[in-house]
Image 1 (cartoon, rainbow, N blue to C red):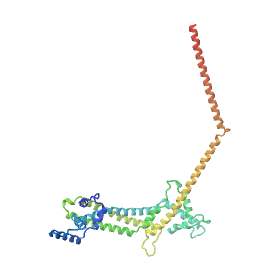
Image 2: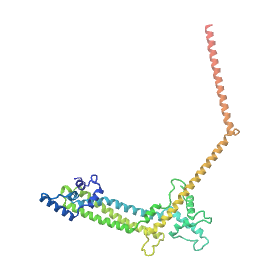
Image 3: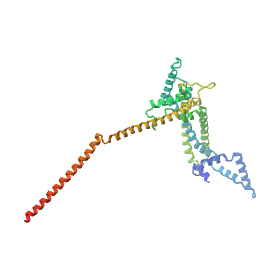
Image 4: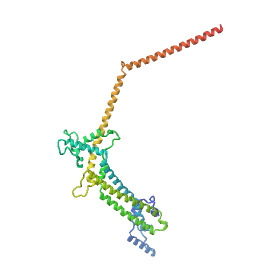
Length: 375
């Protein structure tokens, strides 16, 4: 009875979706159901016939729920559609964001500008390589391997240090912003395939059509008391799902176009045997570079913070030393301070003396007046 109520009234609080999934996968098929019904009829005709076992009896009772298979298929698809379409949406949105940031992000442009400038400087004695207008992306992961003459630091560490100390006003502070796309975002993008997006969207479209067909069967054969709220709920869901499906198909087309434009912007060419640059080939380069850059960026930020702390401590030390120097006994400000105290004490003593004198005079006046009156 609870399963009947849950399926007919779309109430997952009684029977959850996982249980419905298990019931749907283990439901009796048409040939099995035919045998169960046949056995049930024969058992009624014979007095000593063996009744159905509990599993068969349960499957038979499920078959009595109006359009159980069609209803549960629609319910399960509705529960998974939103998660599937949202997953595709998030991935395409991330892809678009990364392409936009790589093409026009201020931090990215500044970092790439430094790579080009330092590369030209290092190749200054070479006429062909010392005046380059650009470089291939495959250079970026190799910057950490270019070492100084004493092998103490890499070219990448110098670029990171120069960027933070000359381009980032918030270097060494909490609000300091990483100039490149985050490594984890680039890694996620490197795992994406446009073929997978197309495959997933085709499957969703196919399943959505199947859901619409199954829901139509329920509308046609269900009794009036069993058709709602299923019909209103499914019609609303299917209409909204079609809109979301079309939107993501458009987003996929736009993301694909944006990616190819970004790859062309960086003069990235497809590998031998490939028709176009793949997200894996493009974003893997950026992922490695961004990971190396961020490790050094964190260390340099920490170093800058330590330097600022030392500077602040030095300033405080100098101010403290100056303050101690100001309170020496022979210093003018010290003498003035002692003179002020002495003057205040003298004024207080004078005022007390004057007050006592006035009090003495007042008492003498009263005594004399008394003597005059009575004598």
